[in-house]
Length: 258
Ligand code: GLP
Image (tube, rainbow, N blue to C red; front, side, top):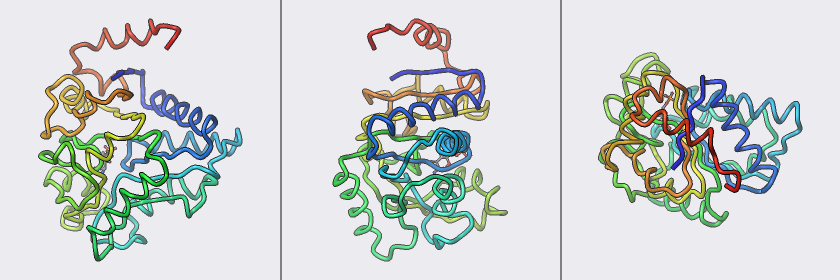
């Protein structure tokens, strides 16, 4: 586990985009795991810029999104399908048939979830998973209490998550109560993971996820056991980490052979 602390949001977005760029250049048919929420927006803007100005080619890339609200149509303006189209997919040359976003309308949810899991495996697994973090420490929509071994499934959202997302829907009564989400176990199998967090309102959650015990009550804490995870944080999000100075020291003194 590596903790990288950058001065501000723009810097973490740029750093994350450079990781994606290197992967796409080295493995053009790589499998990217993508996240929604406001946190990865800067990363997506930078990837769009790299595509337009530097010709970064996404034509062979596969994508899998973490989650989708259950019970709203994909065309809904707040669906994660719409979010991804508007904020990334329609601006780069990723092929529509290579894009995967969980269905929020599947009638047989269980069968859909199994298909999603099988599809990830069939394409060789996720090479790089991008994550944000909810205030309650969730990754994707794996709310507190989610099994650390869970797979893609339907999940009931917490009141806190519903309140956090009410700003997008206009009122908390309009926020769906359920989501289809990759499980903690699904995410854990990604070969590389970058969790992005910015802002002081994430500081306490980040301290729990990085330095607290590994627990299903903070599902991001499982990443402490992952061999290839980076927590990419701005100063504000890192402000409650006890070993803040050490993480910076490690980053500044990285051995050349790694
Ligand atoms: C939702 C998503 C998560 C995301 C979280 C944080 O709950 N399911 O994947 O990490 O929001 O959102 P934000 O980045 O807006 O703080």
